[in-house]
Image (cartoon, rainbow, N blue to C red; front, side):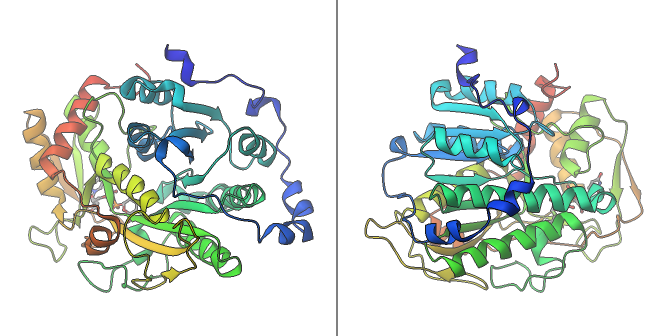
Length: 410
Ligand code: UFG
């Protein structure tokens, strides 16, 4: 049944008072003694593993849950629903037909006591950490909220995970860490640049924090995935991107112009040094991106790749007897193809069969002319390449948007 995936248990975050002070007060010697306890093995079959997905009700998180369930993993989602919907969780169960393998808790990762109960209730093997605020513009207005939620929330998560001997983690990073990139296509060797906004800085800081965790305790098995521009939706049209308010990103904006909810696309500048003057990005189908996470778990379990440190910042750590790796591995997840704003609009027009109004306005502050990924490392080490092209991304985005013009709030 549809309710099966939502377990109403005593872990209801609303009944527990968050106590942030316990972070400081329990962070002491006791933890250091636990450093050397074994990490969880990722060498077993997916059906024997449980993956904790933070932010699993969100856009990328929900699509990743579908792919994990389809590969046979057990999935536990924690999500505070601050920018997502419980309906997405129900639909993940519906799409996969495996609601019994999916458990959902409405939990804020800042709530250490409830998070601890989640780890106590489930034998978590690895974490895929999506939860975080993600609006670039908003982050410049609310830096404290962004650092508190994204950085402090992650620190609580990592600490609780460590207390339960879970040191396998995939972190949602972003191509934003490259800033205005020194080379195109961007390889993982490309130096990071200082972020131009708090959101980007939280991504960069969390990459560093996870790297320091591995340096201090080599059992940490960290994969940093740097996403390019995820768009599209599951082919069923049942889950997709559902931004609150007026979308900040190009694709959801275009999709809402297509449904008639918004009137006219604003193209932020046509005087960039690109073929048609508009910004060029590496758009990647969210389902391809989701599959990259499943491959990253295979990599962490020693099932694919070499585990060699490749690219700036990567670290090769000791390998457990069963093959479970450790270290810090960094991968770009993109398609390797750049598309301009005008190309995206054209492609979406073909998908929806309508002409879309647009006008050229000023450049958006902080935007760069062009970025797209070199994807060779993910191809060789993860055995992963993006399959879907821009036409398919737009077709799937339109399928979702036209079936759900108001997102999950039908
Ligand atoms: N654009 C428009 N009009 C809009 C929105 C966007 O012309 O209404 C243009 C932008 O100028 C840019 C392109 O469309 O050239 C893509 O813009 P998005 O806002 O969709 O995406 P960004 O590349 O700016 O941002 C994305 C992610 C961020 C991440 C960033 C850098 O949303 O999380 O890539 O990697 F930080």
